Image (cartoon, rainbow, N blue to C red; front, side):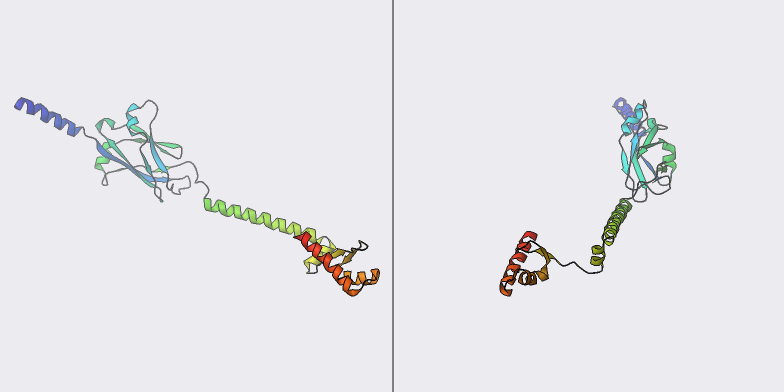
Amino acid sequence: MRRVLLPLLLVILFSLNTQAETYRISGKATYADNSPVALEYVFVECEPGIIDCYQYRGVKAITDTYGYYTLILEADAEENDLDIQLSLRGENFTHTIDLAKHQNSSDNKVNQDIQLEQNPPPSGVFMGFGCFIVLFVLVFISVVLRTGRRLSTKQGRLEFMGYKQAKQLQCPTCNEMVLQHELVMHLIVEHDMEAYDAGQLTGKVMRRTWSEEE
């Protein structure tokens, strides 16, 4: 019985000594201008040929609004001094697993800040505001050009000051263009029509123009 228990105890002790421990990598990610990299994933990648790293490949953590992140790995003694790559927005940063440093840290984590070489992308708010400004300028230029063209003619200047040219109607008898308010008088004077008949005919002409406008 003792012969069976002794090897079993040795196996248990050995397995406890080689048991993986939680290894935390924490830090702050910033852009080249020191602004925080907010809400972006930090991935674990591996250099070509480093097979021991593959078990951590794809582990990821998202940064908070201030750029802080924490990656959690399960590492044992065999992974001590293993190089892994921390990837953020296409840029890679080497991290060497240091179990002793992790164990001796007061907060049980190894710190590694990340600073990108790239600048932050343009904000969607500012891009939207910029598009609004461009659209406003284009509309303003269009209005100025149209107003300028109107002011270049006498009729346009009169309309700009509030004067509107009277509408003209075609006389049904002689086809002459006559101002709308003068058509009745034109029919009476030029075509010897009775006032009532001239009014009736003018009404028909006006109703015809209304139907055409609709």
